[in-house]
Image 1 (tube, rainbow, N blue to C red):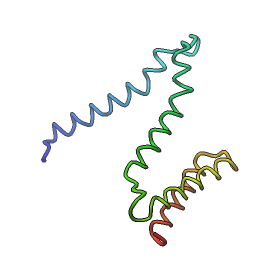
Image 2: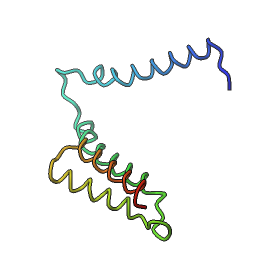
Image 3: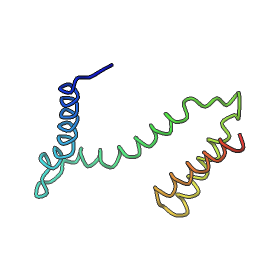
Length: 110
């Protein structure tokens, strides 16, 4: 599909406008001096955990425990993530460590 320069500029502007709106809207709706509603505070606490669970389910949806490696690389990588996070409580370290272990297992062992 070929886009004309005008269409390309229109798409870039639309994406930039959407990004700006989503970044600044919370600051406009909930200024620093105004109390944040209880429901929004609840969402701020609950959504990160819910999103992590959703991502884990999404990542594991294609794993077949009957064939192939039986999901062993994924299980080992999840174990590494849990251990690293338990020991260091650093999200970036846990995710990167689990990813590295998973990639090494997939490339060299399974």
